[in-house]
Length: 76
Image (cartoon, rainbow, N blue to C red):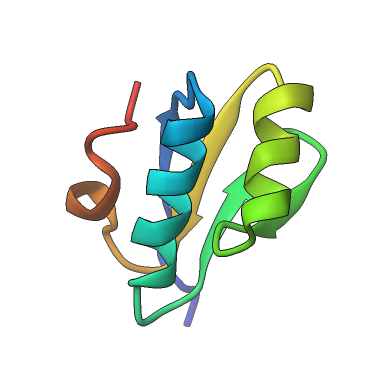
């Protein structure tokens, strides 16, 4: 049986957004990922989230559960 993936495009405009996003991700009991067309990294990693913000043109948060309300502040 295939897992359902939920994916939302997000916007991280400042370092404060990166910190708040990472704190929200750490609070999730399940795995949460940042993805773009070529890369996938843990959304619970401050360094990874900060680097994605600087290097990626588009950032999506992805999980196997509907994480919309965990990250609605950042959803574009």
